[in-house]
Amino acid sequence: MTAGPAGAGGFPLLAEIGAPAAVRALPPEQLPELAREIRAFVIDRVAARGGHLGPNLGVVELTIALHRVFDSPRDTVLFDIGHQAYPHKILTGRAGAFGGLRQDGGLSGYPSRAESEHDVIENSHASTVLSYADGLARARQLSGEPDRAVVAVIGDGALTGGMAWEALNNLGAEPRRPVIVVLNDNGRSYAPTTGAVAEHLGALKSRGGASGGAEGCRNLFTDLGLTYLGPVDGHDTAALESALRAARTLDRPVLVHTTTVKGKGYPPAEQDAADCLHAVGTIDPATGRPAPASGSAAPSWTDVFGRELLRLAEERADVVALTASMLRPTGLQPMADRFPARVFDVGIAEQHAVTCAAGLALGGYHPVVAIYATFLNRAFDQVLMDVALHRLPVTFVLDRAGVTGSDGPSHHGMWDLSLLTMVPGLRIAAPRDPERLAVLLREAVATDGPTVLRLPKGGPAAAVEATARIDGIDLLHRSPCYPLEVLLVSVGPLAGACLEAAALLEDAGIGVTVADPGWVHPVGPALAAIAGRHRLAVTVEDGVRIGGIGAMIAQALQDARVTTPVTVLGLPPAFVPHGSRAELLARAGLDGPGIARSVRRLHAGPAVPPVLGNPATAAAAAVTAAAGRAR
Image 1: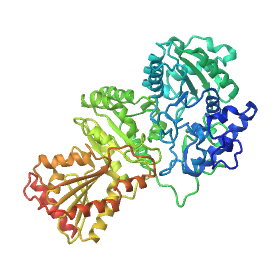
Image 2: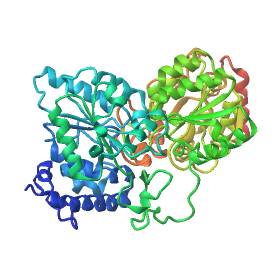
Image 3: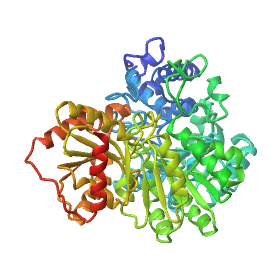
Image 4: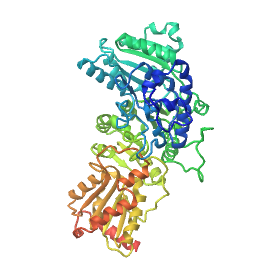
């Protein structure tokens, strides 16, 4: 037996598991103990570091069975989303790395090709795995390797996404191209799965297991051309192995329907009605409750949004809300509790959510679509053609915008600004604090056209008061007794970092003005006028610097014939790894010291005289007056 990795002390069976071959070598009577150790190990490590808990506890026996029946990496096991891949990582020799789970430079919380040859895909957006499997099976067929099995594990929640059905449409049409689809049906994504597909799966489960003959019944999957096996108890390793071996021998597209319990074996997770402890921070492993922290937890950006949206819904009967299977994570639960008929969870179907919102707007309502920023990428065409082309009043609230932290490349909401600035007629707001969030949300919902409000992950900083306002642009700081040298334009919550940078720059003898547009796109003409009074303008955003707000500001200055040079600070056009938000922003030079360093380098360059004559003379005079007041 292959020796297991370090880091599995106290787990004697895991200490012997260094590769899937060791799992296959275990006698069947040891498998329940292996499952117990895996669960205890996952609870212990996630409690210490945070991570996805409920999804991983629910697939322990299923993962053991997969690695006993299939020979990874010769056979390929693919996981949709991948947040249930911790047992897979453990059984493929990575238990010793769990001490650094989701930490900077440590183990990824999702499959990672850089970590292991057993991880083939790492896109953690839902409903994609069946398309990967279809393409890989086609490649195996073309290469003359049909004996290398392709197995795709997908949850019932992901079957609410349209892409899964596009793939099933292709898989079932070719009976000679074998793919094994393992449906991990736990009845939920975050919340319980809803819709017609969920009802159909419920009907299949009500007919009983394989011994009852359900595998021979006609159903949606058999009508699509797949052989259906199940339902199979997803916590019975022997039954799972039997079904998977049968699926392999059929040598055609097969769906194995397994039923599992999210959070299995850990009472705090099984009893958590909200999401079965789907994802947690550090917790007390005995209770599942958050670890004690100093002081009371402040409301998050999401909490503040949920509270303010409820207030608007109480005032306006035309305000409705939609989300893609994420009521609680996006802050819609308070409104759903108060006005259940006006909140719509459409499943993991972002494209449908956006165009459904367009339909609601055509019907006289003002929809608020609450969605993670990274997931709106999937519905860009619908934003462009179904909402913006029709100039419809739809507000998109993008949670987890910018750097999100520990979930890594696929979850950073860093692409939205570069994409959305191209959409004609779309206005984008980025609040710097909860007070501005409330104001900007209210303004967005009062707008007769498409709007976006982007919110970061985590807790907001304290309110930042403006010292002056010029044509809708807040001046947050003006260095007293200094000339107008550097203008820092902050986008949303990076106002705090810009203010910190301003203090550091003043210590170095450099005068700084900090401005917050609030509505960051389109660029208001007053901002060009303000920039024209400064020697240098620097924009700061936690989005991709190519095509983002800084690029739009630079274009606006050029169009206004303002010659003040503009430098754009933002994220690189690269896939940013996982780590804490603070660590990643600092690495990108978007914390206070990093911004100050960039400005000092620029300030040391050739002198550029301020442009005194420009099209917005009134605003230019206003900033001079504001500077005088600041002195």
